[in-house]
Image 1: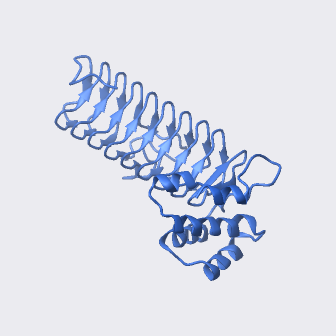
Image 2: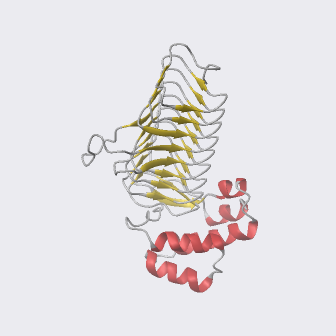
Length: 279
């Protein structure tokens, strides 16, 4: 992704801190508050401005702009803020990640994430570990994405929305409410289609835990109950394993409300019998 070593055309402020074995490509600009961890790579024509911290072994693709001023009318020029990128994360070509709006705030990307080409992560977003953001997805301000979630290409995420752990957002979706953990959401607006069984399997979640999550999904999205009574029924009928407890807490603390159930006939979804077979 980047040339080895420091290309002679790169402009690196002498106050920037570069760890050992860092690569910086041609015509890239590295600002005075930038910290590049050991073994990290910066591609060609990259701009890193304001306080940007890049973890060890992370890679920034060609043409990306990290740490740019937020697109927020509340922001005041000169406010000290920045972007933190974790260890082993890959940022592909032409990605934009804006620094936080608030003083001493951070837009944060976790460890081992994969942010694909031309995606945008706005100010004050917090992205967990092992998150995948697919090409052209747009995360607006203050979005929270929990560990191991996936955001589909060309999807738009509403400000302050939350995407739960192991959730999967289908491509071209409009997400204007919170997506609970473990849920596949898709559509315009996005609705809950099924449980992300494939993602759970890949993450090493066991069969019994997957069954419990499936049971909770049916109560939450197929019982005809609104979220509050559905959560009450989940508490009464299911064991509050760590996975179920997290789902309950996520729904109970939602400020935007959670995505609604998918309506039959509005698109494809797994039938209950199919869900059972994919355990």
